[in-house]
Image (cartoon, rainbow, N blue to C red; front, side, top):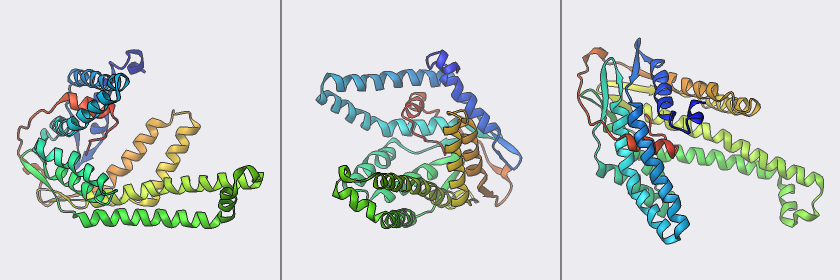
Amino acid sequence: MLSIVTLGIYSAWAKVRRTKYFYDNTNIHGSSFEYHGNPIAILKGRIIAVVLIGAYNIAFKLSPVIGLLALLLMMGGMPWLIWKSYQFKLYNSSYRGIRFGFRGSAGQSYVKYLLLPILAGITFGLLLPFAHQRSKKYLHEESKFGTTHFSFDAGAGSFYKAYLIAAAVAWLGYAAILVMFGGTLMAMLAGLKHAGAATLINLSLMFFCMYAWTFLIVPLFLTMIQNLIWSHTKLGPHQFHSNLKWSKMAFIMITNLLGIVFTLGLFTPFAQIRALKYRVESVTLHAADSLDNFVADEEAHGSATSEGMSDLLDFDLSL
């Protein structure tokens, strides 16, 4: 409400308050996380981000050529923004007084977030699992807690397996739905204007079933990817493990959607907390020794501009 009344100015303070609330209520071994983001710095970044996006939209209205050039410039700058945003978010996060950090270089970010996505598009998605694996490997291996670095040992083959399983389950479901509504599909191909009311109802039901099945595949993919990523991540000698369940994740997502729809959006905060709470509590840290043995280190602060830009583009860069 304050963000609306202040025409978005308060959104920087809202972000800090919301992030601090989640950090304060996330605990490992009896200690919670802390967030140190400066709302003024975030606001400055968002103002610059609004100017950049506004200039991009105006460029397309002036000329398609100018708009295309602006788009290329935006694409060229995005890996740098992602890199600085990682630095900003991790540096402003701490646990037991020790801050996180990100050591990755801008060059690595351009390979992971520009070159590989382009190659994935050129190959019609064949390199998408590989690009996904490399981006996660970059994020996890270049992150650190104090002077202790994270590590990531999941190979590209594991990502291809997750993608293939999700695709296979999805297409098997679609095939079963098409078989169930085969007569309706034939009527659609013959021409809708000659179809009766029953055919139109069945056609609507078929598309609804396809949409519902797609909605069930999303939590399956998210579950496999989270379990894959975090079960192959270490912090020094300490091993993470994720035990997310597809059935429970699907139940949470479906009931969240219904709750948001039937309350005209008022259920949204409850939905966000339910989903995040389950995802976080499904991750376990198996400590190899005492968690008091970490040593603090200093890391570059990162850019509030890139933080604001990533939020405006609805691009989640958080761990």
